[in-house]
Image (tube, rainbow, N blue to C red; front, side):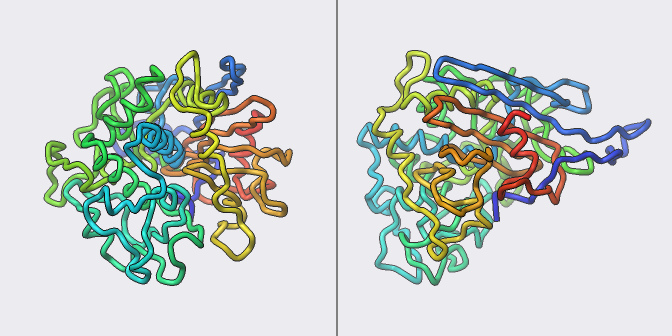
Length: 396
């Protein structure tokens, strides 16, 4: 499965409001924003729809939205910064950093590395809930056999798995002693001078107040209905219902701040991250990563050959370090743009959002987009992607 429930572009003529609302029920219309860019800056932008239906606030390219799985690509940038600093090794057994033994119970002699986790070849599966409560401990949850592929050992099989990234976040925390959301702010967002965050605690008040509210197909708010204030609990509460972030312990629960999908970033700022990727680790005079690190992220560590992983109907055809690669496998179904050109980046899908950050290195251009208020059962386009994703990618 992709990240969450499938959604489609809603042309529904009516939807259900919460009972407290009085009056006619308005149509649930798409909420969309898109920024196209090159190495020098943004070259086109559009935004339409309401970021908050309750207040009538129109969406802009400066409103932060939950990116879904594009969050993984940003985590990859953070990991590569720590690799450059010598604090992490892509090919070392992560057990050495975590302080406990991480193994697939069916293959106890196979070490698991960051390279395997970041490329979805670790043999972890989403057989357990990856949205773990605040007081959970990864060590205990990952001891469950259902979290693992019992047939394919680490390193030989691609299976897109959200659970890989809580493990990556735990490794980052254990190596630095820093809380994941604060670490990502220090490593990525602050150097780029963008106000973005994982699960809200490190974003400024203005960003929290301008969140894009995510709605289901009936019009009910399902995420980020902040109403101008910080959420009372920005993470999955502990099993006793409490939400004291002081309980955090480095490396104990990398799922706390949703590294797999919880980044809140505006399209203007996502385009800036895209320009960083496009220009080999530099943007607006800021060098965040060396060219070799960016090149390593784009190396296809897995290419679908029909028998080496789950492509999900041709949606995943090649993958690097937290990076999707398009247009590299003949006959696959990932041609989102309809032109056969190789691109890299990542797609996202969760809670009614379809998002994308895609780079065309040969043309020196890219695009960042999202469409929200998208209903279940989205019609496919010409590719494995939905028609709304194809339209947004192409700027139609």
